[in-house]
Each structure stands twice: as structure tokens, then as C-alpha cells.
Length: 186
Length: 194
Image (cartoon, rainbow over all chains, first blue to last red; front, top):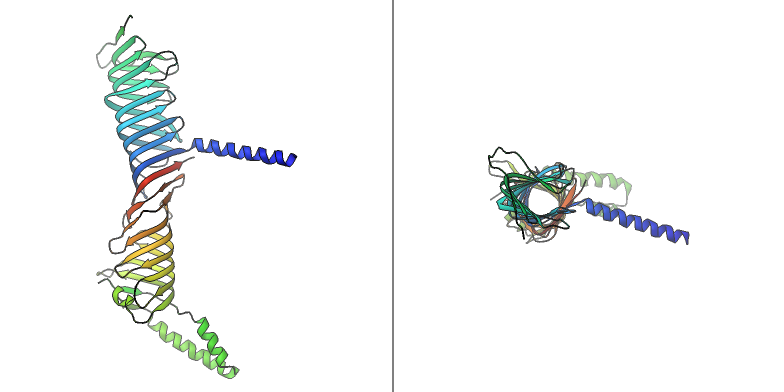
């Protein structure tokens, strides 16, 4: 009986370790790819990059090397990103992995849009340039930037959404535009 | 016409030697027989490098086997184009050469395959392939069709590329052995982890 329990426990632990190993891995899927075996750089078509909870898809991708300790991905065409904070659409962008973790990204579009997952309020941001910085836990919107939180709309050239406090602040004012706040009263 | 240089080959002598020993039972003849046999073999080995072309190599009237042979193909300037080293080569009177446990060295590409078939038109079909370069990602493929004249290679079967930290699997590959790039097609999937 003890032997059976021990065996079951070991099997359970093995399954658990296998499952956790799978979660740590970065999964790449693509329609096709051209690899350079010397430099380990690569180009992809119709790529999907998954590293829980991050999932990114794009028409085209280029990576400088496949060593995810420090790697830079350049994406273009129909970019969609989903992570624990929300979802983003953009035309082009770059994402960084450091120590196999998604660390930061920059996206371009006319505009790019990030819909934030907020439990009680509808929140999204649009801008020509959006920067995700998970180290500082903020999303920064540049150039024709709009952040809308429920009935309140912020406009400016540099807006920052703090992911810790869910607050909007203004960034640098070097662009010369004052921040505009519009509240729609229903 | 690209000349082929057969660097060296060995005949399978064991069967022949045992036949001679059984025939000559007397010990005093045995030494003489061995010396005679080795003399014949040495004559063979004196001519172990010959320049032949793929066409006349494959159209010989009598089929034969080669063991542990290296076939080197040189270009018109005398530079090594590629070489095929194989543990066993079966050359039928006509048709394709059958190779076993072979290593293809094509410029910087080194491929090892369990089996290969070489046609007269320089098309080489390899099965159960692994690449052998230490400083590059490792290629593993079920089969590969190679045009030895231009180095192009492709397969529509499953291939795997191993990296230090992960791998790719795809159901097709297009490459050129003279380049470092590999195009993986059809259902590319990869995993990378620390």
C-alpha cells in the first residue's frame, strides 16, 4: 500500500515538474522560417510567440539571435499582443526578452491601441507609439496619445498609465502640448 | 564532366582468404600462399586512385562493392568540390550507387546519413541524417534530396533543428549546402527554455 502511495506521489511530482517546465518555455510557431545556422538569427512568417501569460502574433518577425537571455524581436504587420494587463494591436514594433522573460516592447501604428483589463472600468489607450515597460510597470503613449478611463479622456503627446496604481500621469512636456482632460457627463 | 577521384578502397578479403587456406592444407604452402595473396592485394592498392566520371563509373558492366571508401569530386580548377566517405558502397552494373553509413562533406556542411542513393545525374538521396558541425545548430532529418552539382537540398518530411537552448520542428526544409541558411516550411514549431 505504502509503495503504491509513494509511486503515485512520485508520478504526481513528475507531472507537476513537467507542467511547470512547459510553462517556462517560450513556444514559437510559424508558417515558415529562414534560419541562419551560423548566427542563429531568423526570419519568420505568420509567427506566434507564447510565453505565459504573453502571446504575440505578427505577419513577419525577425530575431537577431535565438538566445533568449537577451534577444530582440522586430515585428511587422497585424501585430496582436495579449498579456496579463490587456491586449494591443499595432502595425510594427520591437519586443525584448531578457533571461527568457518578456521585459519591454515598443509598438508603432496609426494609431496603436492598448485595451487594458480593468475589472470595473473600460480603459484603453491609443497613440502612434506605445511603450510597454514591465520593469517599471507602466505603459507609455507617445504622439497623438489618448487614454480613456470610463468617462474621462486624457489627450497629450506623452501619457503614462501606471499599472500598479491604475493612474494616468503626464510625461515630458517637451512636445509643447498641454495635457487635455475631457470628462463626459452622462 | 566532373571527375571523381576514388581515394582508396578495400576489397572484402576475408572470404577469399579462408577459401585459400582451406584449399591449401599443407603448412609449407600456407606461407607461400599468403605471400602470393598479399602481393596480389598490393598490386590492387598501387592503383587505388583513379579518375573516373560518374557516367562510366555507373555504367560498368560488372557490379562491385567498396568498403570504407572516400569519393572526392574536384572542380575544373582542381579544388575539392565535395567528398563522400562511406562504410559500404554497392555499385550495380547499371543504375544508382547504394551507400551506407556515409558522411557527405560539401564545403562547410558535414552531413552524416545511415543510407544514401547516388544517381548518375548527381542526385543524392539521404536517409536518417544528422549534421556534424560543432559550431552550428544541429540538423536532424528523416530524408534529404541533394543536387550535388549546385548544393541545393530539400525535403517535405519532418526535420528538427537543435540549438543549445531549444529546438525547431518543421515538415519541410529547403536549403543550399553552400550557405548557412535553412528555410523551414510547413507547420514550424519550436520551444526554447533556460
